[in-house]
Amino acid sequence: MAGWEGFTYLPAFDSPAAERRHRKERLAASFRLFGRFGFDEGVAGHITMRDPEHLDHFWVNPFGMAFSHIRVSDLILVSSQGEVVEGDGLLNGAAFAIHSQVHAARPDVIAAAHSHSIHGKSWSALGRLLDPLTQDACAFYGDHALFDDYTGVVLDPEEGKRIAHALGDRKAVILRNHGLLTVGHSVDEAVWWFITMERTCQAQLLAEAAGPTVSIDPAHAELTATQVGSHVAGYFAFQPLYAKITREQPDLFG
Ligand SMILES: [Zn+2]
Image 1: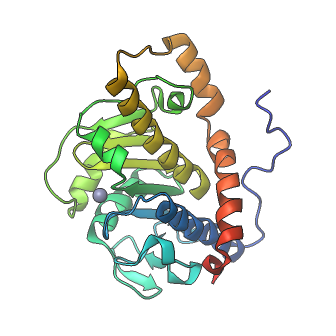
Image 2: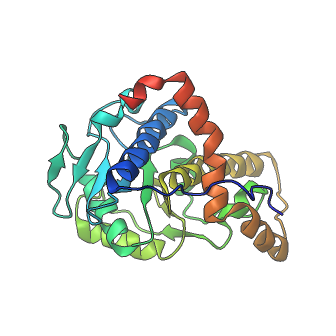
């Protein structure tokens, strides 16, 4: 028993408009959380969510707006050709180059998150996968990849395609010398994986700086991955953060 039986996972909606509004509220709240956690680095970073009706379109933050200020009405809708078709604001070329290819390659993915968070990018400089050093790290056991290349800011969709290829069917990819990218079957899940992966990088950096580490053995890492690394587990883990940020910053719904 994981304990969340009886919990409503991914509520049903009676119209695409209702589902769109629900996802956009999660997305705006996610930017507030990214701001709260200090995941912003100037204008870098983007979280995207697939539109529930126009499946090759995605919603994203306007380029150059502080994560901590983003409201539902600030989000922009982008077509598969990179045109802003709803909302006001600039489109980050890197957001389009990476996320358009990830969404195209992974029809199951509703949302994708990326930023230049400090521990994620520090870990990415090592060019290594994360080890199962903690229970939380097991969410990524056998379920993350390394994009072992760096050739400048990603502005070419062909580079985005290579990142999507490295990601494969996993939940996360470490972009070497750059940062983390996570995906999920909901905004909630993708954003939770980002938050906990950033902390997992921090934990491994701290542990390895302190001394030799002990990994969880493969059989138990695999078991733990099924317990903490499922789609529903990721979605569920996000709920207290959503409750907290929406109570503290209700202007995000504007
Ligand atoms: Zn980036």
